[in-house]
Amino acid sequence: MTPAPLGFRYISSLTRKSRILAWSAPASPILLGFKVYRSKTPRFQDAVPLTATPIVITFYEDVILERIEGFTYYYFVTGVGQDLVESAPVGPVWQEFEPFAPNPAKSTLFSIRRTADEIRRRHSKILTFDGEVAHYLVRKVAGPLAVDYDNLRRDAPYRNGGSEAGLPTGAYGTRFQGGYEILANMRLRYLPTTMRLSREEMGLTATRTPTMWVVDYPILQPRDVIVRQNNERYRVVTITPQSIGGKVTRQTAALEYLEPQDVAYSLPVPAFVNPYAPSVPEQQLPGWPHSIVTGQINVNKPPDLPNISST
Image (tube, one colour):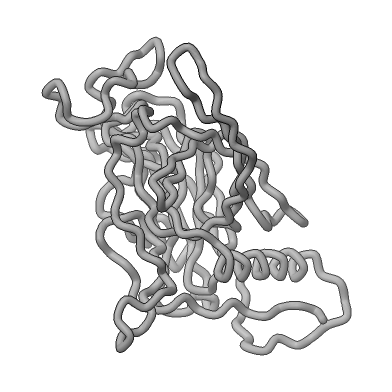
């Protein structure tokens, strides 16, 4: 029997054209991935799948080309086994009903929700003007196991970084084939730290532990990897979410610098593209790439964030 996902929840996004869903993966070796469904009623029988193939990470952003707060969407998620049999659906969860108002009425009454939303909006503006474009590698939690998976270590040996030794696909030091899903050209705030170069038994070793932060997307997880434009790669170590009234306003993470010989460097990544920089003067700005890299990028400029400050 295919195990069902755990802790399915809905997370308010900054824009009014997307909704973020998250869950936890059950500990099961037979899990191929997850399928997300959306419905206009609380009945699973009326839901339609949002993903053609199972996804292998534990969050999903539903991006819609029209404003969706005029009515309520209900979401479900299922686990998919190696035999393609789905588990019982978990849900529904749904977005808050927030009618759109381009110029919301000012209020002198204190509101936790409005305060949290305003903090998140300002953090997003900081990322827009002062953020760094980087790739975020999301570690897989489901799918086909690596060919040389070691049950004792619970991952694949670090020598398997690609297709060497006749292996069909590398695990890049993870448990599953392919290793990571790539969230390309996202913006994050990288906070540098002191770098120390020391001579160890194996040679010169660079030691640095910087930090980074994003607002609400992607959902940071330990052992994910950050790729900077100079191809330096960092592993996410410790995550400290900041919240007000139960709503996350910023996700801060401590990073661990990976030496160039680390297996994570053998994972190829796409070219970096600044989502706000015009490539040709006559063209409009390219859109923000919301989805996991499949060669698809939205064509619309990100919608302006609503000004919901109380002052």
